[in-house]
Image 1 (cartoon, helix red, strand yellow):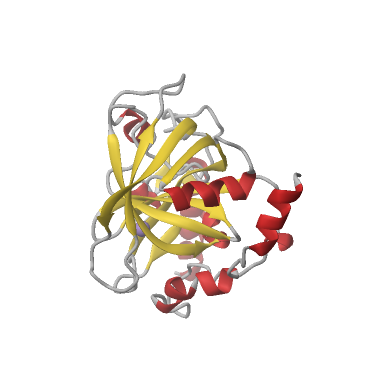
Image 2 (image 1 turned 45 degrees about the horizontal axis):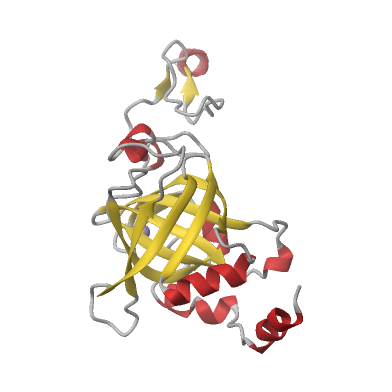
Length: 262
Ligand code: MN
């Protein structure tokens, strides 16, 4: 590494994950929500690659949350319509409070009445890198400039994208307001028209569940093994409910018990 870059890096005072997560923690009661509290140092985790995650979140309004790892936290944006892989479509991305790294594995339901109450799906996960290189320095620089060109290495998010800061600021008017950005696909081999990207991928990238299944809806209790599974990436489908055979066995056990009790 050139001496100049090293000196510049050393001069920068990095805020700790805990400091950066003050707003995130203030908004949540961790006795009531299963969301992570955060604060784990990067050295405690394995990866060298910068993580990213996109969560589909059915809060008051359905939206997608884009999160990019930087300095031990996840820089976060709420993208109301979700990402579009169509270079002619610009998607509003409202920056929100930094989230803990542990949020990258969170899928489930935030209780009603709690901050962000509703179902959260892990829509895509993987790693990303700034197009100009330089790892976290490159990301920090791009965010500061309001022009962050990145390459996504996800299952669904692929290739070159850009986050461009607009002149607008997030809603709410509070002191925690953060800027608005636009998320735009760059032209490459991963282009898809309009909303194809979000419409073709409606299940969890990790558990393959639908929003309804994650939310605990009661329909589809029995998993039909003869029905083609909702599987958009060719990966094995993980069963989240009981199979027909298991249901049959459970019914037989219940009948046997009832007969015994009589
Ligand atoms: Mn959200």
